[in-house]
Length: 395
Image (tube, rainbow, N blue to C red):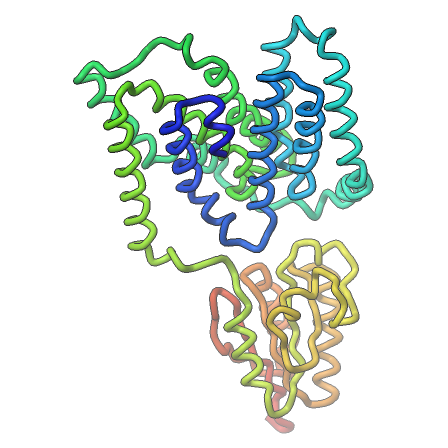
């Protein structure tokens, strides 16, 4: 990110861009998360830098590197490919009269991109055939988009800095000195944002969720760097930067959610293991993955199937019955069979599930009324643990 920003701005602006990028809340999330978003951001930044080098020097080697870097983005997240049209738009705007002269290098870009991305073709086709599994809950599109493109703290600090700069006549309005940044930076932010918003509003796919919208973060940081470069005072820019860091740090460390991550099964599974230590009662566990609603559930609990991950990472020391994430016909079938087996053996069992699984727990409690008494053992990081105790004969 610094090298890309340095190719567009002065050194202090490049440092500011990196700080703005690092302060973005979803970038902080990506940096601490085990999922591939941090690497997707890394390859996106590398592609931006490679593109700038190619645009500046127009050498064959740089064209090949850019094609490879652009393809590498797709290995970590397909939706980050939404930034690729921004490169194409900028190239056509700047080099449209030189396409014939650039033919060999354009061919090298396409060949490098195709060669690197070709192994992904089968996976992309399989995603199309299982597209129902990738529909997530609809979220407020406008809030997420604005929070990434125009973070509130950044906007307030920038307006204050511009106001002070205007008072001392340190606002630089000329734009000739900041091309190509004035064209490229907004494209890197607005094009992927527009693609994700457009797909979300016209189809059943809801792609504007914070971690998917991370593809906008590099372009957003570069655009804010471009705007800040119009403040013709290094001191005011430094005050803006220091103030923004201070406010962000204060908000993060004063927030009760600063150390809270998303759903974790760790505590719930600890409670389960303590509870079943004596009798090893079976445990019905709802999957944490929406794919479980559509794909066959693994029968081998020791396999490396991704659907097993929640109790491989935090093992359960008892027989485990895996259920789909949501209440559907398969969840009713598996849970009903498990309850029937427990009834015949006069055996208790536990059910563990996230909020998506609460309807399954309610259905199981209702369908087994009279055979089991239901007792909640508590909720641990939003993961419910419920005990089904067989009713004693004669009760």
